[in-house]
Image (cartoon, protein in one colour):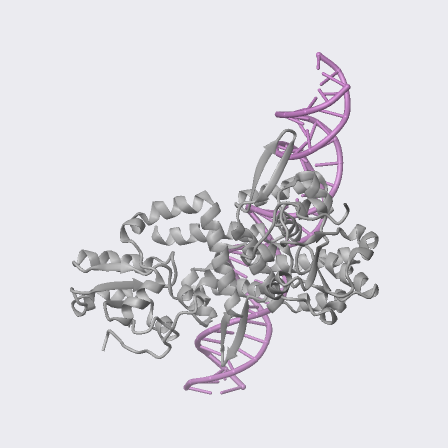
Length: 226
Length: 226
DNA sequence: TATATATTCAATAAACTACTTGAACGAAGT
DNA sequence: ACTTCGTTCAAGTAGTTTATTGAATATATA
């Protein structure tokens, strides 16, 4: 009886693990870490069919990781708490630390990574206070609107080209996006450097920034495309 | 190509999730959080056959969560890092917070839980410094030897009865074991209270204590069964 | 060298998971 | 009432995981 308790309990814990056991679901979690999303938006961004996406969301919900809100004919999913972001980051950190294949992948695809010397969050915060740096958020406008680093300009990657002239050449430009493995910021920094800017990438992305308890801004403070 | 990177990467992360997707494996992780163990010991404690245990350990190893050391005819497994303990605790916390079934199970089996008012780790540390409390570690001797709360007496549950007379009636007695859902400390506190002692349970167990960065003692300081 | 012990490997059946397809449902707009 | 749209459900197939069993491997002991 008391021996069943533990097994039953751990079987419940395993439901959380099971929810994390599929790459597509992890990708959904990562997108949901940016904010609430409709099924369609999640399907589009993850490259799955809508039906397939719906089923995965169902599984995430049964494991308690996401919650749904119905609004008209749309259903908006969101992570059920900040602890889920933390859990995701825990998984990522363990995989980075102990799976050789992860480091191989990172080295293969992100060869630039080392040469770009990412800037730690705390350091960016200090410099931004002194106005020594221009911060740009290269995520889509909706993700920026849901929350961003204070004072950051929203310059979606697609519009970077247009706004190159707006950036100062005398201060450093720091770009960030969805997370440490989101390629948006990598591409942005590469382009900026090509244009002669002193550009760097923020270590990690917005969810990690928020998770670390650093200040955030939810109102769209500045738009680069005024 | 850059789109494959993310999928490949997340598929790797999912291997970690997959390792966590089975209750038996989670139980193995919990035991390994106490220290190194042989396959046989793990099989015994988890109630699985040795072959079955070996296979699950294999999977944990492929996911990078455990590492093995061969010593004569024994193979000793251990967690591959403290980050794995943290990951396990993350899973547990999320399950506790978002799965109704977990709270139901806890309320069904551990009805005593609320009435025992567990003592937080930091508070215990403060009181122990002032000698206001007797701390007992009710885990088996080998787990105690691998690390324990400084100054704690090792009184395995099986020997509690014998040593009841050794405990003081004028100071509080605090018991701890493997973790928040390990029943050893519950049983010990129940027995002690029955004997008229002022007994409480430490919130969480030894792995959580260690994980919190609190001081630990590895040499067997005091034995209750001298 | 023979034998016991600890662990892993291999083969199997039963159970489960992922993805696809097409239909069903319910809310909004015409 | 009818159509459209976003989402979910249901059924089917291919592939994967689990637990069991018995054999294989390797290390120590006699």
